[in-house]
Image (cartoon, rainbow, N blue to C red):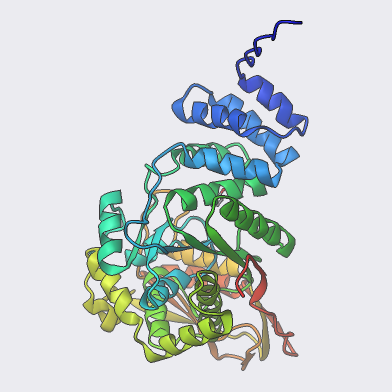
Length: 448
Ligand code: URA
């Protein structure tokens, strides 16, 4: 009889070996990813090795299971919120970012008013896309930098809270994202999915709805890329035991009729009063009803109908006022948006020809809004909440030569003069109406 041999200890992990394995297209174990990510967060794995690893991921990809493992170890790098003592079902929503995207400001109060608490951590705008935190800060005094304890207390009391991403949650993502930004490794679908989902999973919601945008004004330029990202994020959420649904939605022209912080807040308030533009109303109803159906509140058609009725009644506006007041803002500004700060001047963009609007390039419009001061070129730049633009016509609308098609709200005459030609460059005109394009392109996760 032979003696049983002692199990040989596994060799110590080394970053260089993991880089070699990933560059060869091998699948890494959760343990290996944990060692690498936690080592990087703690500072024992240096930037240059993590950068090489990230580049290998960009080239060789990751399997779904591997991406879910990466997400999980990123979640484990920091604090994880458990909100189950507050409510058994807590909803969260994420958008991959677009131009004129004020959906959260409508959807969160609507869902909360239907009895599902909403706890959301959001980001700031960068480049041509806006951010929910900047829009919320249009309410003078409103605070978005909340401690985890304040976040929980506001959720418990009001059933709705929207705060900045806590640095205590998924700290690995903050460090990895900064490195990706300077090493050309942002554009990898597994890395984007793990980055987004690690923050969502750490924030403790049980039910997630994701709006994955595609088109000129979005991070994902093609429908195929957006659909890969949506499917992967839904799989990650479900593997982590969270009910997750995703809609892939068009972002070729700006959403709604406004771009710029105060202007978008006003449009969100109008939408909660039942006076929203058709595309924003459709998007809110589709996302909210998918979430409510996935949460088992009602079958999808009934969920849609309840959302539609509540929006039309204006009753969900109170929830926005609750949120504003709970976070230190003046709730009267919700009923009287005239109390919000406004730009001193408004200048029209005139149609140069008669015909139909064939396209309004969302990225170009976003850049104009940024140059007016509504957004930031670099992280940390100050912004002017008052400025932006109002679209008077959208794609498919007929126009007469010389009629106003948009209004720029500017801080200075020189800004308006300089930027009106840039805004015009976003437009394409045609003699015949363009074929209508759907807003909702596909759905992932179980919503029926
Ligand atoms: N947004 C994120 O949070 N992470 C990414 O990687 C890209 C966009």
